[in-house]
Image 1 (cartoon, rainbow, N blue to C red):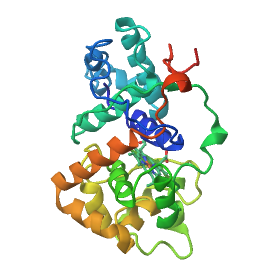
Image 2: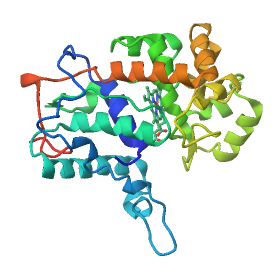
Image 3: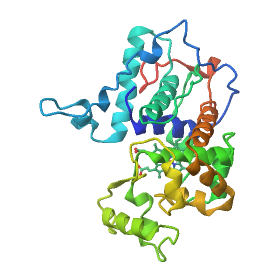
Length: 293
Ligand code: HEM
């Protein structure tokens, strides 16, 4: 599976947006062992990771791949096509996303963990159902905690999952209040703030992106937490995890130990994977991931 922070984002954040309806007792890592035994090697050639050379413009530099979000969706669609060719009608898009998230994490140096499989695809998709379900960078710790708790995730799970911001980018308008507000955000490291002002024009237009972890932007590691200790969280919601004493102890513990962070992250993302699981008549296996059957 190709690295794509967008597919990762889709997997985890869209999962959060779906309210839990079922227990996830039917999920199993070997769910497809008889119906699609080669599932995990299909389409997972990492071709989008290949850099261009003098003689070859690689997939990642194709015009269609310039914008991350379409790349993520297209990657999932391409994987689905390959999976359908090998195992027609067997594997849900929801499970492909879950595997994509796991592979994206592992390919960028994070922990590899068994994913539980056996989800069906949902039968509806409406923008309005997302309203109020997703965390926002200006939320307080209480608001953030409530959103995660509504999906059965603890405050500690939230701190662990937030480390996903060790990769990927955010648009300037998601944090420009911290730079140009009156007063500016005092929890922001002054040098980092100056750098961000240089990247993000105060006019707000255009609205470029900045890497969320300036230190190791492409590594899925615990640098995210060390950045927070140094006032280097990009979003207000990131920095809050260190400012607030209720979340700071997890930040400090996981900044100090990769092993402890990895355990906490795997535990939390496994729980996230059980959110909103559909089975029986609640779902089906889509033929294409981007359209209903
Ligand atoms: C704690 C609450 C969270 C808030 C407030 C939040 C907010 C955001 C925002 C505002 C962005 C930038 C979007 C943009 O400007 O295009 C972003 C990016 C991202 N988020 Fe979160 N997020 C949260 C939790 C999570 C979790 C739990 C995960 C995954 C486990 C995650 C994974 C990502 C990734 C990978 C990106 C980068 C996307 C890209 O590069 O295209 N976030 N998040």
